[in-house]
Amino acid sequence: MAWAIDSKEMHEIELTGDVLAAQERLAGEVRAELARFGVRAFNVMGAIGSGKTLLIERVIERLRERIRIGAIAGDVAGSDDYERFRKLGIPAVNLNTETECHLDAHLVQHALEELPLGEIDVLFIENVGNLVCPADFPLGVERNIVVISVTEGDDMVRKHPKIFAQTDLVVLNKLDLAELVEVEPERIVADYNRLNPNGTIILTDAKHGRGIGEFIAALGLDSR
Amino acid sequence: MAWAIDSKEMHEIELTGDVLAAQERLAGEVRAELARFGVRAFNVMGAIGSGKTLLIERVIERLRERIRIGAIAGDVAGSDDYERFRKLGIPAVNLNTETECHLDAHLVQHALEELPLGEIDVLFIENVGNLVCPADFPLGVERNIVVISVTEGDDMVRKHPKIFAQTDLVVLNKLDLAELVEVEPERIVADYNRLNPNGTIILTDAKHGRGIGEFIAALGLDSR
Image (tube, rainbow over the protein chains, first blue to last red):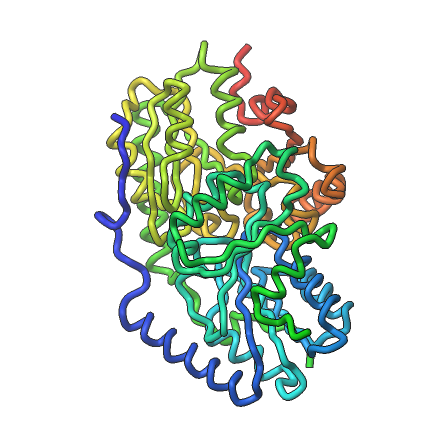
């Protein structure tokens, strides 16, 4: 009576080839637009509460003197993250997706129209907070990043093999809480390395500013 | 240069009327099937790491002597939660949705075929871990429940107005971590009460077994 059901057997796949091709085309347009202005863009994915916004804030704090940074804040609703970016004085756009669980290249195109791309070196695109939907939608960025928190449990990687297999840079955040929530970071790191042997996983505690330098170096932004 | 974009203006809505009607019809079939066997079912939604599984485990531990409980474990991939339910000796089904970010009534129908409904009084359906997608898909249950954790930040409710407005029972979990992550539970409670004045929000610390009795009472399972 207890077994596993695989939805592929009974469920049509949502993303047909045509839709995927259209997304790839739009992502290509975003890529070209960013290249035209020499903007390096990063797609930051992760669940709500993984610490995406604070991580980006920490990077901005460290680099703002020598790199011009912009941000797109993607959320289903609300403007909390957007307002945090604006408080740091950087150009930012708020993208509310309403019923959509992810950003897509088309939405990013509209956001780019609102940004002064000629005055931005690095653009952080904070995706909608979950690890399921954003995986399927290329945004035309230089690099995809997944942020996870130890508070999400040490089965996090095993529950989302797809996004971790295809993401070469992972941030494991809130290291300061690991002991308290009885999660072993080593187990998450091992799961990720097994799934993606060529990927990089950075341990951070963004709240207390730890691991930010390593993250910046992994992004290739360490221009000292 | 900084303003908000609303995706409705530029983006077709994914769920057309036809799809919604089909989902409602399937949910009605699930409802009828559950009623035929006198099974009371609960759809438990919440992000990864909010503590859905542990909360359900705590309820099972308290009620198993007098109520026969079953579970459906919904996840994109993996069987960690399913195995946890099986360890408690209850009938359970693992539902891997692969690319889908939510369960739907059709998947639940297949899961019900695998469960001994005649031997189950209460069925917990643990949905896929995020707060965006599951909101749109009725499962034909008695009640929808959203579990959030203080570690997800105190802007959680404001970021997901839709699911909180339509969910009458919310569990705010991991109260033991509130001080550490500097989140004020009162703020989350106030946001929810404003959005859904008739809803109930229960504070729990499932790890240490606090608030479980209140949650059981809110479910109407307190049959002493």
